Structures are given as C-alpha cells and as structure tokens.
Length: 109
Image (cartoon, rainbow, N blue to C red; front, side, top):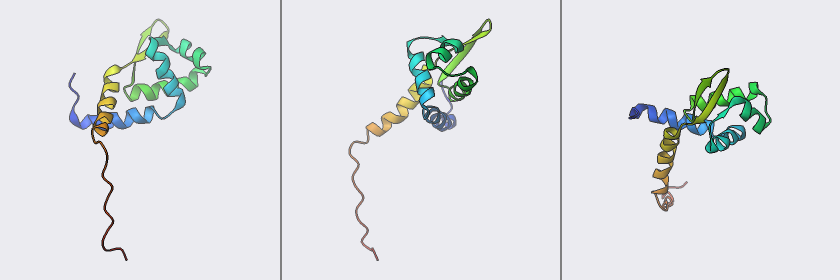
C-alpha cells in the first residue's frame, strides 16, 4: 500500500503523540504478543473500560492499532505498517552520524 507523501508527516506526528503515554505503551506491549479484546486489556492493565477506550481511540487514530468486532467485543491488534513508517523516519537520524558542532559567530557583541 502506497501512502501519499503529504500524509506521512501527519502519521509521524500522530504516531509519536500516541507513544507519549505509559498506558498506551503498555497496551502496545501486550498487543505485541497477540490480538486482545478490550476486556483482556482492561484486566491486564487494571484500568476501567472508559479510561482504556480513550487510549485505544488515540492509538487507532494514530494508525498504530486496528480493531475488529466479534460479537459484543472489540479486538485490537498492532498495525505494523504504521510502525514501519515511524521506524523509517527515525532511521534517517541514525544515518546522520556525528553532528558537527556549529562554529561560534565572529560578530558577538
């Protein structure tokens, strides 16, 4: 799937924002192992469903997780292509090597 170039900065910002909360990081860690329903995530994280719903919405809007409904439960899983976008973005920084410090200005008053 080809992602439009103008969409990539939005995906990067949303992705890093979603990664900025410990509960969301814990959700992602649990989903690394397997797809889980909301009830399993609530139990594992010891948080209410209403609180977790907010975090899951943020992760979903950032494209980091996908969901599917089965009966009355919603199951969540990682959306690996979005992680690849974030990884590729960060990889550009590792290629920079050592950054040369700026030279002092000659005209300091």
